Image 1: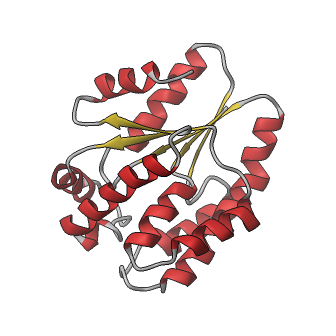
Image 2: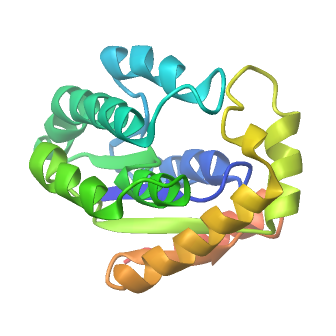
Length: 198
């Protein structure tokens, strides 16, 4: 099964991706853990271009192309081989992030979907959106060490718009997307995620 975790920056989705992979491994599954953008060596090189630096360094179309290049490399080199071998895949973000963030930043959702269909062609089997208060998430995101704060620099209003985008995404893909209340300690949220596994 291919599972993605989504949410606004600072929502705890990376922690939940880690805890979910641990849980699946404890059940005896072989799990590929990955992230987006990133996961493969080529995609990790592109990641630095996307998550560091000036928030306005790329136009929405250029950013979309970079995300798809990273995603395709990770899909070809790691995700498809793992799924073909019968492994589970847990990814911290996938195309849904691009759908939400690109639309929020003035991009074209139809173009995102067209690129997804043309270049990627694979949706997760199940997506968990970790939902939480945008102001709290922003404080968490800005408190993290490192330089990967390009989107946090866009502020609380941006976070609120992205949160609304994820709610709309759940309406667009009701068979796949599950909203999980992330306003709790990590283990409580992890239990909420596990309760929604098939």
